Length: 497
Ligand code: TNX
Image 1 (cartoon, helix red, strand yellow):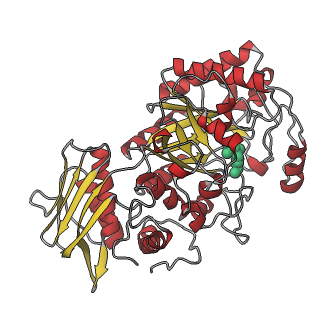
Image 2 (cartoon, protein in one colour; image 1 turned 90 degrees about the vertical axis):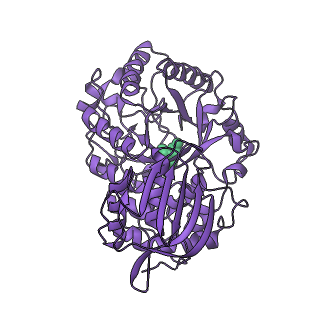
Image 3 (cartoon, rainbow, N blue to C red; image 1 turned 135 degrees about the horizontal axis):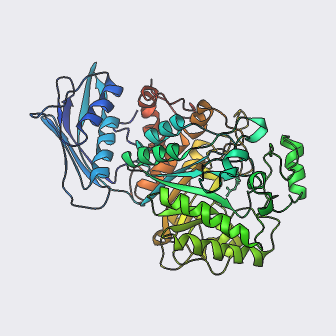
C-alpha cells in the first residue's frame, strides 16, 4: 500500500502534515449525500449531511471541464469542482483517500489539483454475443464512473443478435433478438430500458455511444429482413473458427450461434437497405443525447473495397445529417468520402504497421478524431495468461502490466496527442456470460485504461510507471471488495487486505 492509493493518478498532488479524522465529521454542499454514501461503503461510518460541516463541497465554475481541487487539513476538507462532474470526481478521489490509521478512519492531509488528459474516457460492452440486463449495465456504470471514465459504448447489433427496440422496424426485436453465442439466451433493451441506461449514465456524468455495426456483423438483420442481407460468405477463417470454437456455420435466416466474424454483410447496392438504416439511425439518434453514433465498419471481409467505401460515405453522411458525429472502427479510414468530423476507433496492436496506421491517420482533419483501443493492451476480453478460464487470445495474453504499458501519444506513427480524442477499453463477450465473469476480466485492467485516459502522460508525472501503479492498485483492493467487485487478484501485485 502506498501512501496515496489513488487511481487514476491525479495531475498534481502535494502531501500535507497530519490527518483529518472521519469519525464525527459531517459534509455539506452538492453531492454531500453521494460522499456520505461513498465513505460509508469504505469505512462503515455514517457521516451525516449537515450545514455546519467540516467537509465542504462546492462548484465554482472555474478551471478546465471536469477538473477539481481538493484540500485536506487536520481541521477540514474542501473539494471544489469546476463543474458538477469535476466535483463528483473529487468526491470519488476522497473515497479513495480514506484509510485506517491506528484503528481510526482518516483522510491524509493533502492538496490535489486534478483534471483529465483526454475528454473521451470510455469502456465498451458487447451486449450481443452475450446479453446483459439493465441492472448489470448500471452496476458497470457505477464502478467505471468511480475510475473517472465518462463514456459507455454499447455494441447493440452483431451476427448473433439485435439488442435494441426500433419501433419502426418491429421485426428486429420480434425475430432477431432471441439468440446469442453458443445458444445462450438473448434479449434486447426496450425503449424504456435504453432511456433508463442513458439517464443513469447521465446521472454519472457518462455519455452513451450506441453502436449499430455496419455493413458487416449483420447476420441477425437477415432474420428480420432477409431481403437486406447477402448470403453468408464462408471464408477459410470462418471455417477455422467454427472448427475450433463450435457453434455451427452461419445459415441465412437462422440464428447464428458461433463466433466467427466477417461472413455477413448488408446488400449495399439495394435502396431498401438505406431506408432501413434511415429508420434505425433516426430513432437511435433521437434517443441518444450524446454527440456520437457508432456505425461499426469493421471486419467486412467479403465486400469489395469500392462498395465498402461508397457505403461508408453514405452512412456517415446519414449520421451527420441526423446531427450526430459518426464513429467507426479504424478499417473505415481506408474509405474516401467520410463525413467531415468522423471519429475513428483504433483497435490494432501496440506494434502496428503502416497499413493500419495509415487508416487511423485518415480520419478527418482538424485533429482530435481518434479513439484508441489497442487490443493487446485494453481489449478486456483477452486472457491474462494461459490459466485464465474465460476470454480469447487472438491479440495474445494481456497481463495487468501489459495493459498499462503504452501511451496514447506514442501508439501510432504520425498520431500525436492533439489527434487523440481519447481512450476506450472494449469488452467483447463471446466467452463472457455472467457479471462475475465480466468483473474478473474488467478488473483490474480497466483501471489501466482509466489512468492512461485521465492522468498526465508517462514521463510527465512521477507516478506514471508500473511500480507506482501496481502499488496504488494493490491498495484499492479493500475499496473494490467493499464495492462488490469480483476483481482478478493478479499475481505480482501485493493486494491489500
Ligand atoms: C474483433 S474489435 C472484433 C469483434 C470481436 C473481437 C473479439 C472489432 C472491431 N471486431 O467482432 O468480438 O475482436 O476480441
